[in-house]
Image (cartoon, rainbow, N blue to C red; front, side, top):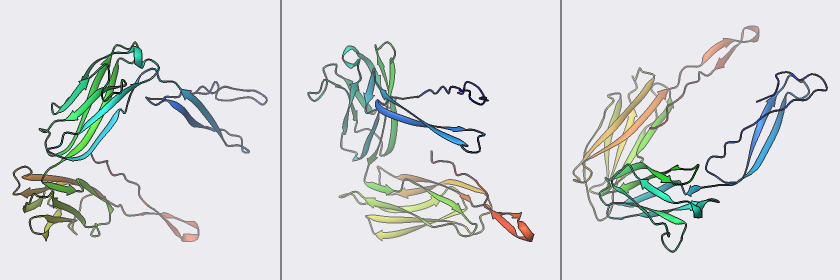
Length: 281
């Protein structure tokens, strides 16, 4: 924030800046761009830097379990870091999902006194992607509530790629074809019984790559699609008892026609229309 909108010749002003450090410590820097009406120096770059000291934090606070088989029990550890780590006690650590187990040990796990939180995924976690937030409470005077985000994917008898896809921006009648691949996780075998789209504008086709172990689902948009935006799911039915139904989300948007504006001496200039595609949930 500037101390004044206008600074007289020979005068001076101040710019107040606040640096939000988040949970990360160490050296950090940010750049501030100042715009002026000085024709000789219309913009000025100001760089601020700091050495951030952490009082208390959890590391890591984002945990990716990756992909693992259903019969596996992956384990991850979270350390307490910061200047006040030795004087702070963790009071609780609670997940929302009952299939995620969280343990606290004030003396630490695996011969590491800072590894005070142990997180494991239980065998009852359903096949597919999962995401959860673990709420941690401490007796620290300022950092009483901390969060750990965990995510991953339990792989069953059928491996699916991708789990969702986008048709992107496309011209009417020229939308790209997309392919979803399903593979058996040995020694399992399976069959794809049918594949359907929840949006009637999307046509799907099942292709058998290798009977019992690999299939492809091809998806394309009908040439007569007359809407601006598309969203839906491909619902795949299999004979596998663990994964009888698999859903793949998709979306896309029609590329709007370019707008034409008058140019010099009777010419025209084409300006592409700007739209946005919402992110995958």
